[in-house]
Image 1 (cartoon, rainbow, N blue to C red):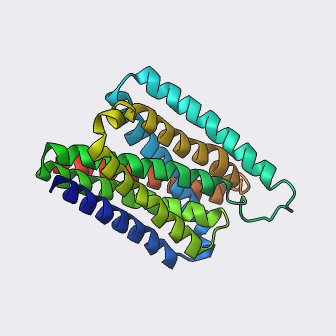
Image 2: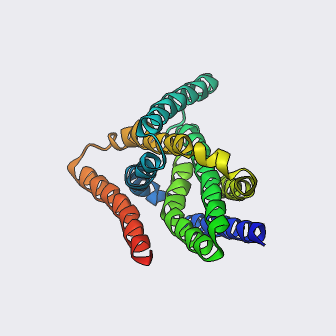
Length: 248
C-alpha cells in the first residue's frame, strides 16, 4: 500500500510539473529574452533559498559545500566537452547549441530523483505526511519547471523537444520514489551530496550561461527590466516557501 502511494504521488508530481512546463508552450518566442531573466531568478532563488540550506541541514555543511564546488567544476568540464563537440559548427546567434539546456536537464533530473526519494521517506513515516510532502514538492517545482522550459527554448530547442525533455526528466521522480522505498537509508546518507550537485547546476547555468547573455543589452531600460525580472523570479521562489511554511 505504501509503495502504491509513493508511485501514485511520484507520477502525479511528474504530470503536474510537465503540465506547468506545457503552459510555457503558449509563450511567444519574442518573450523568451525577458523570461530568461525570470528563469535566472528562479534558479538562483531555488539554489540559495531552498536547496543549499536544506543540504546544510541534512548533514555536514563542509561535505555539502564540497559537493557544490565539485558540481560547478563538473559542469564546467561538461560545458567544455559540449563546446569541443560543436567547435566545428558555425556559430548560430540566438542560442548556445543547447549547452545550458543540457546542464539544466541533468541538474533537474537529479533534483526530480531526489524529490522522489523525499516523497518515499515521507510516505514511510505516514500517508498524511507523504501526501503533504508530495503537494509541497509539486508546488515548489511549478515555477522552476516553467523557468527550465524557457531555458531550453533559449538554448535552441524546439518547443516539442523541450517539452519531451521535461517529461523525461520528470521520470526521475518516479525512479527516485521506487528506489528510495527499497534503499532509503543509502540515499538519505547521500542527500547532502546530491543536493549540492543540484545547487551547482542551478548556479552554474544562471551565472555562467544565462547572465552573460543579458550583458549584450547594456542599455539602461534593458538593465532595469532584467533586474526586475530576476528579482521577480527570486520572489516567486520565496513566496512558494512562505506559502508552504504557512501550510505546515
